[in-house]
Structures are given as C-alpha cells and as structure tokens.
Image 1 (tube, helix red, strand yellow):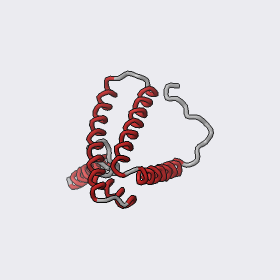
Image 2: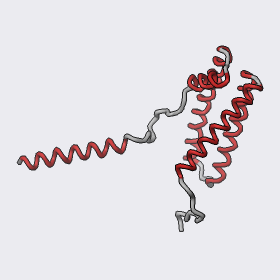
Image 3: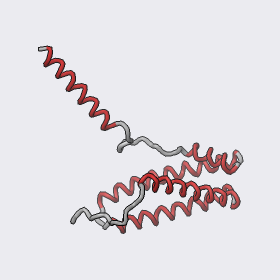
Amino acid sequence: MKKIVIMALVAIFGLSFTLSAQNGGRNGRDNTRTGWSAKDRADSMEKELGLTADEKAKVQALFEKQDAKRAEQLTQQRDKREEQSQDRAKRREEMRASLEKAIAESDAELETIIGKEKMDQWKQYRADRQKEMRDRMSDRRGPRSGTPRRAKNQ
C-alpha cells in the first residue's frame, strides 16, 4: 500500500513539474508585453539626446499614440492572416511596406517635435542599435554553411 501511495505522489509531482516547465521559461503566447513602455522610451531619448521636459512629454504622447496604433494594426494583421490565402511573400512585402510607411510617418512627426539636429542624432543612435542587434543575432546563429535548406514539401 505504501509503495502505491509513494508512486502516485511521485507521478503527480513529476507531472506537475512537467506542465509548469512547459508554461514557464519562455513568454509563450500570453498577453504579457516584453517591450519598453512609452515612458521608458521617452526617458531613454531624454537621456540620449538631452530633451527638454516639454519635448519629452510630447515624445511620450507620440509613443503612446503609436503603441495604440500598433496594437490596432496587430489585431488587424491577425484577423487578416486568418482570412487571407495569399502567398507568404506577398504578405511579407505588404507588412514590410506598412512598417516602412509607419516608421516614415513616425520619424516625420518626431522630427517636428525634437528638431532636425536631434532627429539626425536619434537616427544614428537607432542605426547603431540595429547593427548591434544584427551582430548579436548572427553570433547566436553561428557560422552558416553554404548548403541551402531543404523545402518541407520535398
């Protein structure tokens, strides 16, 4: 009888650890946000570019507006993904064009707030950060061999 109870407890604990390990570790598809808030981004820009309090407030308001717009776009993209049967490359190009347009609009509006000189500094800072991220990602992937990947349907 003791053996059965002990075995049952071991099985229950083992199962509970397995299930919790599947949900933990990575962020999964839950609704937690891992990015910076509008306030955090405005604080970062203030520190990098020496923005005034008024400029910081306007930048933060702009970022909050952009976050709301992005959330709406994300919802639309999810809905669109389910109903569309377009090929993947065309959807990717549409999303890329939409992103580039949003960035251009955002940059133009930001430039009116902080001025051309600070905007140039910000673009340089952003380009440097993007390069660092690309370098980190390429380091993570390791050296690539010259062989192409096989298609899944072959």
